[in-house]
Structure formats: structure tokens, C-alpha cells
Length: 170
Image 1 (cartoon, rainbow, N blue to C red):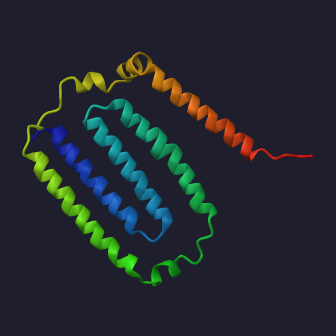
Image 2 (cartoon, one colour):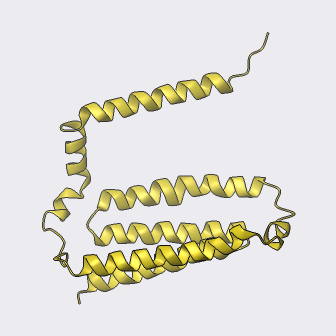
């Protein structure tokens, strides 16, 4: 076992534990902080898979910008009566763990099925493919039309949001 493989398993375990802590914490601030830990662990997994651009994007966009927004929303909400949400028991509170166990069984079956294959090594091309230079070259050569269409769609959505949010004064 190489150091890279051990690091991958440690980061995967950290990601799983932090994901479980996100969904089991009653305090939303603690859950949000564990979500940041999960995003950083995921970025580390991307680094072990030689996807440097995706790892940096994960840290900047999700662990940085999105989590700041989530923390601001949590702080601005009035969460005084959050205990009332957990006192009521219904069929939904019992179906969640059952569905979670079914999903876990499905995931374990999938891992057992895939681990019998020949997926022991990462392609030697992965170090070249995951770089910013290669992603930029592919984005502006082979995928320039979808890239421009996505930018036009985002521009139209932004203009629409500004028009809808603009206050009209007589």
C-alpha cells in the first residue's frame, strides 16, 4: 500500500465521518462547520486523484463562498423553536434510517462489485489531464460552443434576476 492510497482512505473516512456529523448535529452552526470539513476532505480526495483544478475549485467555491452564504443564512434565521422540530415523531422519522440502511447496502454491494475489477491503478495520463492548462485547452477548443452557451444562459439568468429584483419607483 502506498502513501497515496493510505491518504485516500484517511480522507475518505474523514469525509464519511464529517458527513454523518452534518446530518446528526442539532445545532445548525456545528452542522455547517462539519460540512466545511467534508468539503476540504473531498478536495483532498481530488488531490490524491491528481485533479488539481477540481480540488482548488472545491475549496474556493464550496468551502469558501458557498459556506459563507450558508453561515450567513443560518445566522440570520430565527431558530428559537428548533427543539419543537425534533419532538414530533411520524412515519418519516422512522423511514429515514430504514432508507439509509438500504442505501448503505446498495453502496456496499456496488463497492464489492467494482473492487473485483481491474481498477487498481490510476491512469498515467491523470496527472496531465487534471491540470489547469489542459482543462483550459479543452474548454476553449473542443468545448467552446457549450462553454459559450452556458455563459449566455448564466448571463440571461443574471439579467433576469436583476430585472426582477429592481425596485420600480414612480
